Image 1 (spheres, rainbow, N blue to C red):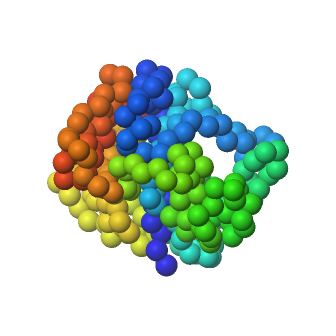
Image 2 (cartoon, rainbow, N blue to C red):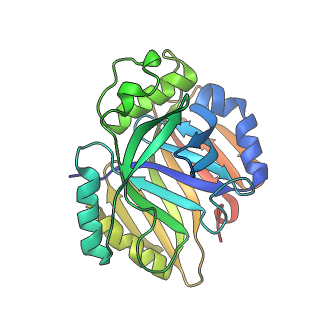
Image 3 (tube, rainbow, N blue to C red):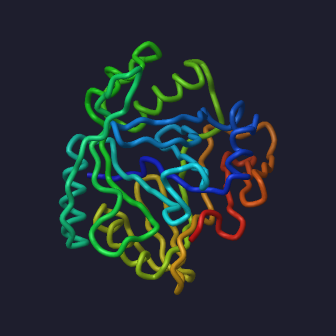
Length: 281
């Protein structure tokens, strides 16, 4: 059973977050995007800016207006295409990290109704609290049946692609096309202890981990994660790499505040970099 990346989140500074929201390029050319507040039960909600790809998506949170703070700047969710994935993920994580892992059902409030959304493990496991969140998730089999069926193009099941097809149709229209394909690479800076535990987690999920001159890299389904361990306690995203669905009309560079920029290349790839490492503690 494979555990591909489902999505990731980053906590960024307020200037960069405001620039993302105001970018016509992101909204009209790069991706299906939305700013939304998610209500996931009576005591759980968050607001963020979302960019939807084909099978992966990512979300940005404003450090000054989020339940996620600069102390918890990075989150990565894995899985979502096969039934039983979250239970298998629990079994593997328990064996690798020697931690008891439970699951829970997350709901999404839509038009006043709590719809079953996805099954998930905790965002962090037993042991030291670390700035990197990582978890395994699996969409609920009935989610697409009930979530905005009026924009359906026939999607069904629990795959990442089916859910994102529905998301994109809802926010951008059924005929809309954008450049973004999928997130295919990440470069992270982590503390040495955090790096060690993250490598164990990825190996448990079937990723192939190998050493690199700067640290290590993990190859999984359609993505490579590169980690650069640091002595001091520091957690940051340094670079994101994307596959585009088509080559742009011309290459371009887009800056969002002083801390982050997006380079769109003529070879149908894009690179999002974070000055000074981006979200960090």
